[in-house]
Length: 212
Image 1 (cartoon, rainbow, N blue to C red):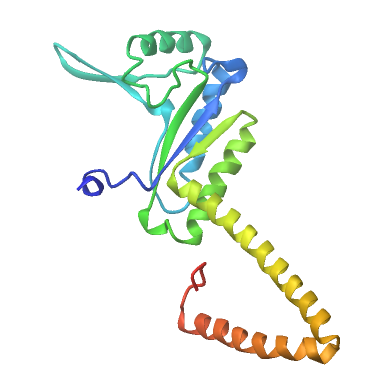
Image 2: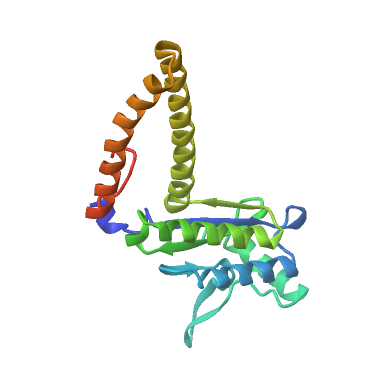
């Protein structure tokens, strides 16, 4: 029931950038944040990008409801005005600004269908590269991004384990058989069926994973 009510829990990537000298109230920094979140929209298979620079202040008055930008960052005067507005409604915007105002954050929602595909890695790398290019400190979290990093770590460790296992097996066989053919023939007997199995799996479209 929770998943049905909150379907975006698994496909959200949170990105936070740290302001220069520990403060987000800097014109150049806020303009950079606005640019980088705009550039995220060029990445493939995104549902939406929630940029902190596009947040609005909603007020009700005698004429109805008015909307105005929360952050004004064209000049220093606009930044100071935004700082005052945020200080009055800090709890409402707590998901986008750290308590000490060191970090400003936004959210990228990816298409749930790419969570187990290579496009997820492309999106994660694209977000990281764009944050890296800003020159500011940043933090990225969220299941899609973490899953990409986790898979790469496991893949690297698995590759190292395979090479280590093969090396130890070769060493043991050389010590036991003490001949070239005594070592080579068992490897051929075991290796050829494995190659055939992997090739057949690829032919029929069975994905290769940790279990397979």
